[in-house]
Length: 112
Image (cartoon, rainbow, N blue to C red; front, side, top):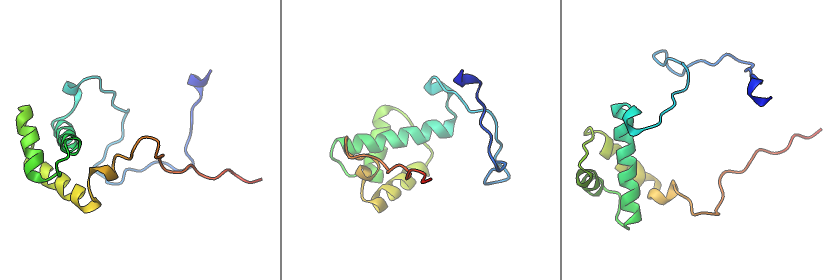
């Protein structure tokens, strides 16, 4: 039975920062289960996708307008960070490849 198989790591996992606490994975079933920061990050991400879908550049102004139209609010730092990142990489399309364009290549097979 595959459910009884346990995988072990050769090296102990250490958090990247001493403030990071490892624990069981969170299983979320609704928007209400998200923390405030997670909700805000999701709202800004979705606003960028809406802008891109409408053919509008993902500027701070456009993303803020989408968020305001939804009736939601996010902390002031989210929109500039996302807008800047999207502008630096050349648009949302960089993060959303066309269907069938494939993802990253798999690792090579092990030779014997």
